Length: 271
Image (tube, rainbow, N blue to C red; front, side):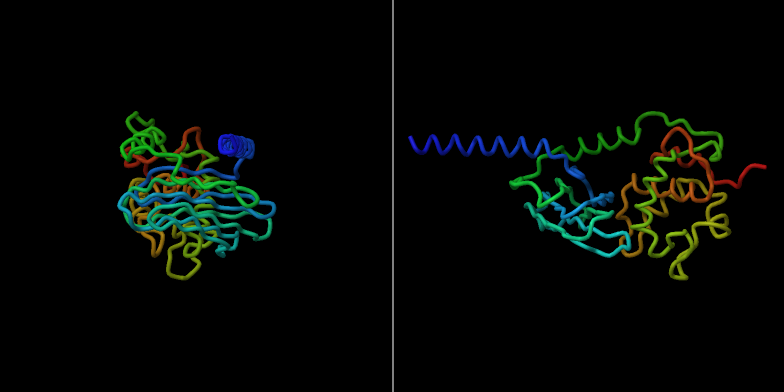
């Protein structure tokens, strides 16, 4: 009699824990299957907070990690999974805004999930990622998200608006985290070697070029020391931010990756 009652108690406790977790909204919840993934997002915290990372590397080696930075770019915490497993770290940094970057080594498919929560995190371990699409299913989902497979309406001029104001604002923290160390927070070279991304240097480097060229350059050569680590979505968000900073107008549709970028040329303001 004791053993069945104990089992019922444990089952009830697990159910209660799941209910409590469902009622507690996480600060952020990312999940996916990705090649050479890099994701960056912003969290605003008030008190201690936790990052729980569950991951599986399909080849059984390599790693995936989530790193938290403060607004000055200083690292305040990191959680790493080698190969596969679940790891959690609790941060006691002061209340405020933080940037969290998820980065995977090697070009393997990772099945991963990250929860960012207030306090000390969820009261149980995942055991394995809760999200598991095949790689092809994830690619299909990504293409649907970016509008691939459907014709993309291309404005006659870049001055008609090729990105949204929300997208440009979304690109700002990504730029500050990934690009500003070299290109400066004001888009003026911070190290004397990287080119300015505003003013005269912007016009000489960007005018007459297509967004496809700018996309290719950023995705394949940036950021310094981590070339190729930016996702396609991050690259177009960064481009939107740079264009907005240089007074190009926002429009009604977001800028998305695709061959249509070859038709969008960066030009001076019309007379």
